[in-house]
Length: 156
Picture (spheres, rainbow, N blue to C red):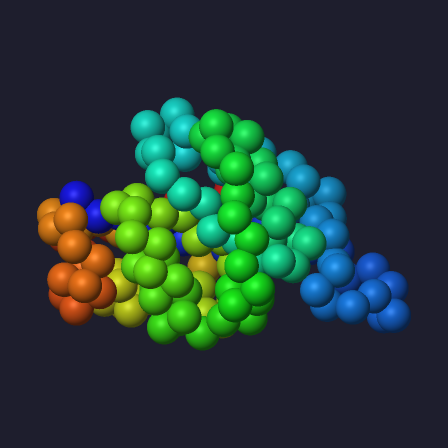
């Protein structure tokens, strides 16, 4: 089985206009939602082998909450910052592992989640989690066909 878990970073703080986009931290809502979503995923028994995260502060912080809940260390990837859908999927597939979480940004996250869910996920709000599974163990096959199942969860 191959699994892809997409997590859009939690809500960030726009703060000072002088602050670089890459350096925006999570706001209070993001700091509340990320550990809750991470705990819900862990309680559901989802256990990726690897967490890949954008290098942006808001994504790294979100990934850190998931890593703590799942007992993993996130791997930071510059190419995930502002990445399009194809890059998000290819980066997961290139890992060679069967179960990968990707923590990144919109619009790439929404485009990929919507495509993999055949329009079922119209938008990935901040800290949303979308899980896609294929019965194959081969990413090359998985990236060429629709997932066998998918699930979606967003903060409430």
